Amino acid sequence: MYGSILAAKFINTLMHDGKKSVAQNVFYDALEIVRKRVPDKEPIEVFTQALEHVKPSIEVAASAVGGAAYQVPMQVNRTRNSRWQSAGC
Image (tube, rainbow, N blue to C red; front, top):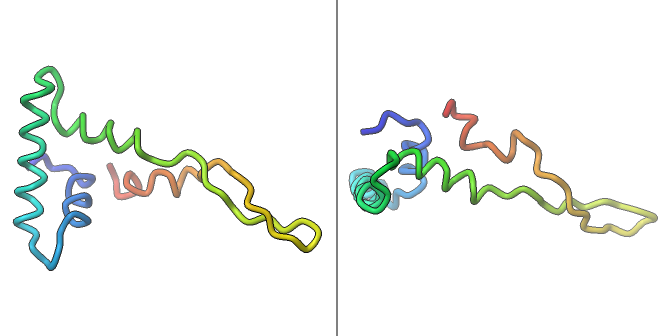
């Protein structure tokens, strides 16, 4: 409907038991609700912005120091952070 690869990928992750039409209906109904609540923006823009806000910015990685492994917080690599956008969005 919107021609967005990001939306298509989200619909595929939303799908259960191969029922893609049900997942599409749920997604597009949600975007219609967004259209009514935020009339000055396109719903797909609101969806994209919401995904930007929920991406993690820090992850913990194991670091061995002196034979002991510690969990050290690190910045998320840009390629891992933007895996949704790596699909060409």
